Length: 160
Image: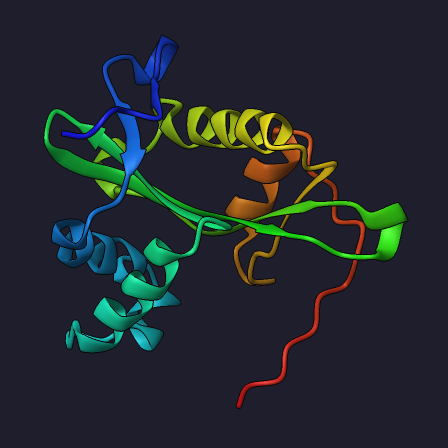
């Protein structure tokens, strides 16, 4: 295993956060598909995920993180850094695709992952951490609010 990004302590003791590898893709896609919404949008064919992984992995502004629990992928998230002119040129950290395996939920892993993410965003100079979550994910909304996130904006999307 390459150098870990972090070794978690507390309720998620023993879990290592590390950069995802192409070998993690089947487990990552399974995490993305393991809920009512993901089951309708994710696919079994790994080819599009392989292309997306290669693009994310090649760009230093993006980091695909795996929560590795003794060799098992127990969680994942993507952290992307977005420069912009608004807010006096603020660098934003965008969090996407946060997932924790069903068997690993309820032990503080998601909170530990997000705390690390906020710290990493701060370390890299971001002034704002933002994320989107589907309006139908009320449990996720409560989770993010417990961590200090606020529903300050209304997000909009246009599917192409």
